[in-house]
Amino acid sequence: MQTLMLLVGKTNDSRLISLMEDYTKRIKRYHRFDIQIIPEIKNKGKMNENIQKQKEGLLIREQIKAGDWVVLLDEKGKSYDSIGFSQYIDQKKSSSHKRLVFVVGGPYGFSEAVYALAQEKIALSNMTFSHQMVRVFFLEQLYRANTLLNNEPYHHQ
Image (cartoon, rainbow, N blue to C red; front, side, top):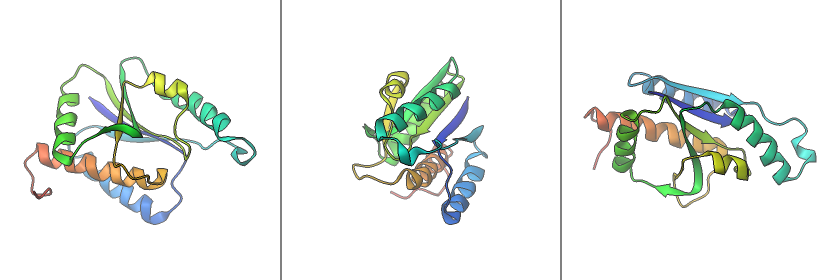
């Protein structure tokens, strides 16, 4: 199964980009993994947040294929500790879905249409993080999950 991280908007901070590239390279040692970036909406400063979420939602939905298992990274989603998340990843790897797609929305989250499309929501924390930082946190947790599944000495109890 392929894992895809679908992101709304580019990351502009070179430090975050470097961390994302490092974790992506590490994750690819374990399974097929890609990051796909949906370009930011043009003239978004002139539209309200609901219109922006709807337009981003259309672009997200265009990237979803039949057979995908779509998981939104959303503050209202289910929380896991690192071991629980590794078990979740292990379960999904053995499922019949072609792609496991994790979606990070824009600064205002997701449209109702995207919520309806998704099978699950996962929260990284009860705290709110910028949609830029969530990318790095999630990649680190995905790497950690893979090291746990392979009994490698990265995670400490």
